[in-house]
Amino acid sequence: MPAGVVVIGRNEGERLARCLACVPGRALVYVDSGSTDGSVALARERGVEALELDRATPFSAARARNAGFRRLLELQPQLEYVQFIDGDCELAAGWLEKAERFLAENPRVAAVCGRLREKHPQRTVYNLLCDIEWDAPRGEARSCGGIAMMRPDALAAARGYRADLVAGEEPELCARLRAAGWRIWRLEAEMAAHDAAISRFDQWWRRTLRCGYAFAQNAALHGAPPECLGVRESRSAWLWGLALPLAALAALPWLGVWALLILAAYPLQVARLALRGARSPTENWWHALFLVLGKFPEFAGQLKFRLERQARLIEYK
Image 1 (cartoon, helix red, strand yellow):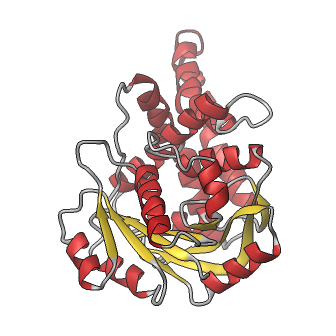
Image 2 (cartoon, rainbow, N blue to C red):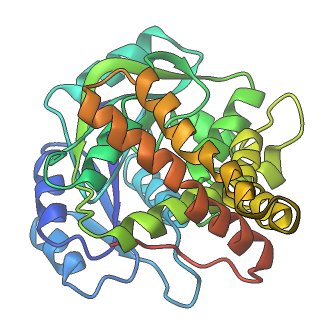
């Protein structure tokens, strides 16, 4: 049986319309997390099964995917595969068939993804950063993102995504899948185009803060060896986002302005990363600059995780 599709979204508007249009002829469920822009009506007008999550429970992508998965299996109990996609994305032509074929030929692979591209990488540097981030190595992987095709039996055995996670739910799920003996794979094939629509610095800051939150959260859940999920990233955020600035301040009484030389580590790190980049020089320097600058919102995300009593959705749009 062809793969079914679960789309999740919140106030995606026309992006959602394009997303739904790219999966004709498939069992399709749309799950909405409190949209106020008519997204649910838009989906139903197109004949799509649409679920609205109860607003009394905090929203999360994990919760939405679980709800969509359950409803899809109610509609198609014999479904062999399920494709998850966000409402701001459009699947590439032929991707579903390629992913289905790969899973059929590789019975120990629980999840497969492909090349995710930013739809408008040249509009803003923030969109470009997303496109670079998603250009991950092909082959066996430790995790996939939220856009992937999965085996329902593997997902059900893992009890789905952890619905209480507001970020980083995909690597957390993949850690559990791998611990159960499953494999994760990333193909060379084009999978989807993503419309990040990040045009402002504050949007980039919130998105990167969410990454820091996810690193801290996953380190708390799966930080022990051999998984060590999120540990390296968390340590990096604390080093560059807090330890180095504090070291410079602490050295001021003894070294005076010379203590500020400690902060030279930041431009040196930018240069080191840029010179190692695999893209054009301009893209490499932008990427390196924001990787280093991103340690500050990542550290803020680490703090947010430790101080927050009730996890809340971290949005950037």
